[in-house]
Image 1 (tube, rainbow, N blue to C red):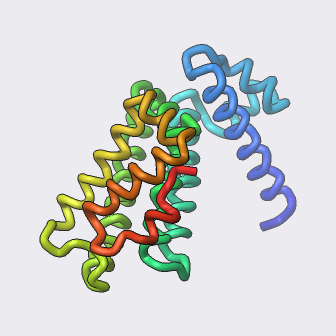
Image 2 (image 1 turned 90 degrees about the horizontal axis):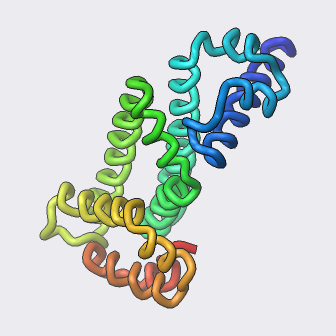
Length: 206
């Protein structure tokens, strides 16, 4: 890649980061293309030059967010750590996806853009594949309960993440009360793992 191509990629990333930052702070409906242009120190013409139109711009924002969080999860999934620690790390990325408001932003964008909605569906499918893979590995290692199907365990984890997304009181308590967080996470993981001592130490949402 030559210097001109690198500068172009850098400018494109700066525009996307500027838009994401503004959307997270002020919501999608309150931010204009003029706001984004000022934040990125470019003209609106430059934004449309890189992204074509608003629809394509929204799609690129959604794709960028999903790619960034999936890359983090995939990296943790392939770490040379215990299965327990890898599951904790992957779960923490999904928690960060929620607490950082990036998930809410993607949900808002999906209401305006069909491509973002499809990207979200693909993201969920890839996350499911990783979690199912970890569940299967846990069963092979005789760490995860074999009397429960992979699908049941996956939906149990997914249910917890959805509750964390929807219930603000619970989200606040689990992220600010360390004693409650560790006790509650131990309770959750004890329903999946036969030996959950690692979660008693590392299982909080710190």
